[in-house]
Amino acid sequence: MKCPQCRQVALPYSQFVFSISHGVGFERALKGYLRCSRCKELLKLEGLGTRFWVCLAAGIVLFILEIGFAYRISRSIGPTASLLLLIATLFTAILSSSYFGWKDATTRKVQTRRTA
Ligand SMILES: [Zn+2]
Image (cartoon, rainbow, N blue to C red; front, side, top):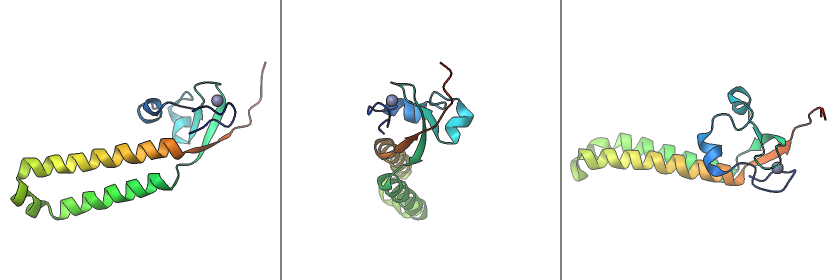
């Protein structure tokens, strides 16, 4: 995710994933707004890229398959291991999709009235 203003990474990954305000407050962050952590430019998310959706879809499909075959998986590797497998799948899907979403996200500058 590059800032179109300063050409630097607008938000560090940790802040993109774990911060709920993105420097603009929770409500505006939900609408896709964020503030560049370097130049403080107000930006709007345009898209998260294909890899985000592919990882998310793959994660959901795998998760559903594991739920569907839970009994068989549990019988062959045990209930604890199958639960761990489910959790690992969920984590991998969340981490990979959020990473690619962060990496590939495109942003545009938001026109703001300057008071300076
Ligand atoms: Zn910037």
